[in-house]
Amino acid sequence: KSTITLIGSSQVIVSVYSVIKELVENSVDAGATTLDIKLENYGLDKIEVCDNGSGIRSVDVPFLAKRHCTSKINGTDDLKTLQTYGFRGEALASLCEVSEMKVTTKTDNDNISQTYSIDHQGNVTESKPSHIGRGTIITACRLFHNLPVRKQYYASSQRKKDDLNKIEDFLKAFALIKPSLRITFKHDREMMWQKLPSSSLKDALNCVLSRPIASQLLFKEKTVDELKIHVSVYLPKPGSDTKIMSRSSAERTILAVNRRPVIVKELIKVLKQYYNNCHPCGMTRYPVCFVEISVPPSDVDVNVEPNKTTVFIQNMKEVQVCLEEIILEMYGPLDHVPSWHYTS
Ligand code: ADP
Ligand code: MG
Image (cartoon, rainbow, N blue to C red; front, top):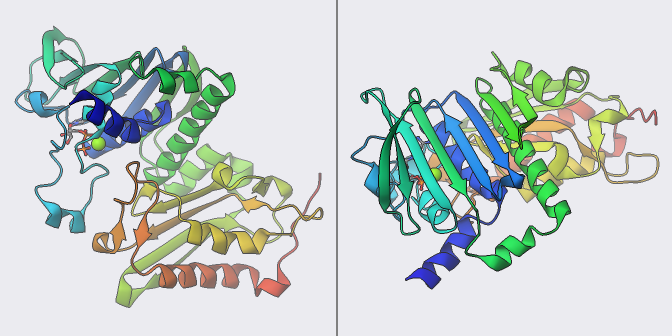
């Protein structure tokens, strides 16, 4: 068994970032409103995600880290109405194979929380009473200790830092998608990023992007009724200052499809052409922006890649046109690209 499943696991759990992504999504699926994330030694020694969600019933614990065991769907038909981030029951089964995993959890019906140790096969080897409120803490120690080549990848300190940045970007995207979340992110006891619950998306933008940047963003939305497509954006106002542009798309262009932070090349392309070459030096720049797409769950396939960051949208053309129309209303035709103030 072990070789084949280990190869499979290394596709879901490819990095410290992908562990955080899976654990955070599980917490949100469990209805959590607070997320406390802690890493030690860039996550290689220890990763911990603590939430105040529903907790896990003790009868479900033996299946928690078993492959394809999920509490979120009952059959493939449910994929058409998918409301949760998870549905494959693979993340914890994979994580326990490449780390030493512990789960502490308490539901509303439990008097006291239990801490379970899980072995590489997903079996519970030990259970001890512990002392947390309602919710779940998943800890993963010594990540990739049994995958020396993967671990070697992290020998470079640049890679470790890149992963921390990716985690921060992901949490920021999530904070916009779910403004009411309270999030803390610590690395070796240092607070990397934190946010209080926001009462609105506008509020969350102020907090995630900073007030001076967020105040230069304009809200617009459009609906295609027949196809149940809704596109809403926060894009830079024409004439915004240089801080509103960045050199890389990943850094600042935040896209969400049905509340999933995703990368959709077709949409990035639409955005890009309006900002291309608008810099005096002819450099490609990307706008700081937040684009939210909502389509019927049956019209999106999130099952393209194990990490679900690439999605297929059924009526992609119509979504693109919708976004183009919004941009056109804001900036006018492409050959009249607005002037941007480059002060530096
Ligand atoms: P999936 O999310 O695809 O269902 P996972 O392997 O990520 O699969 O999780 C397996 C199961 O463990 C979930 O279906 C859920 O029932 C439970 N679970 C995982 N994390 C949490 C959490 N933080 N709070 C409550 N339940 C959780
Ligand atoms: Mg999951």
